Image (cartoon, rainbow, N blue to C red; front, side, top):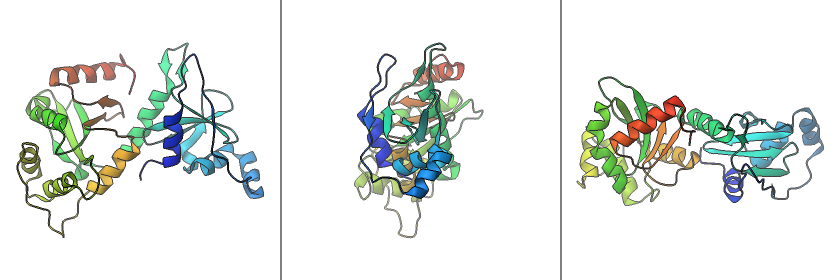
Length: 262
């Protein structure tokens, strides 16, 4: 499902830092109905879920007493028990030096990515897999083409690449049609490689069903801003293109917990 626009609004309009907290009032709403008031007394998550248009399961108590955490796709915000106040930004545990929001964000991404499998992707696998990366790609993206030019070396390093389509220009555009044409080709790996080299791929047949719309919506849910969008199987985000040697080093650091999740 596309990223909840109301939650995205709160997530991008304020920032919680270690030394400062910014609080913004939620959009005014009508007084809650009596039934909702009773439900809120029993479980504050119900009122929060109603106000932010998310499921109750997306709401849980945070590390701060009286404050609730709401996670959806790649966004995490914090909400008062009555759902009236929303804090957007990262929450840190200063004793442990840990970014609690980043950890929860990775968990939420990992949960969202369970909705797609290898059957929805174009997969380039090594002989022995050490790392699995889900890469949101655009046929016409320059850095996506650079990453794909490294595919042999990435596989040699034990990195499995699962490509999901995310045409940045959106539905109905040339990049979107190219993605569909690649998916509908008899050899998707070959068609993707040729498309990224600038070759014309025959248009997709009307009877060919593709996952492009679904993976595009997932990318939006995860807060994608550009391509390539690289995610580990633990939900960590690697921003943009990295040469193979740097990418494998980044993955080792994430695996060892030497760097916080993105």
